[in-house]
Length: 287
Image (tube, rainbow, N blue to C red):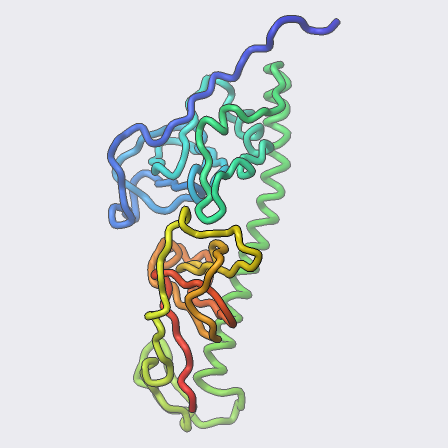
């Protein structure tokens, strides 16, 4: 027999951090309560503003859903979920909802609580079935996460190997029998005897005069030809103009990536691009 009447609604409140105190990167410590931004954990803090709940990335990693166990602090880059609905089941509902598609900006991804709350989702109201679904997904996701973690560990090791190969080649050369000398610099160690040490400023030109910041709402994207807009973490948007037309290297100047190192700190740009004030522009000097 078909059900009649209206289905109940999920009691859901989304808000930014309940405490008006804002924290910055300098407030983070090595111990205390975990601190979560729009996505992953970014450090620790002496206070907490949530406990045993879910958070949804609001800025940056928008739509990223995190299950928080115990006490923690959420920055205002996250929406804190307040609900009486079963957390474990709701977690998987939100994971399946593809909330990242609700982003309102290309340059700086952003979602609002209103958009999330009005987003349609599939819901099972049978409590026993909810538990079975959550239990099943706990097991399946744990197995998949284990594979991901092992893969991630392998990627980290390969990245270290890649860095070691690069460092060895540029400091010692590629001939195994070449004589070495002490560089006098701890992180470099020995270098090939016929290699020299030079300050970077003597082999590159700094072209920071070609940097120009421009806010997201001022970046025109209506033109037929658009160019990459670069910041500290690489190309982050498109724009109808450019500040440089050259073959250069960019080095991130600031930002969260200097702390987290999730992305490369150096990028190659060849051609026309717009560079903002969060990346230094380097070009090798002519021999």
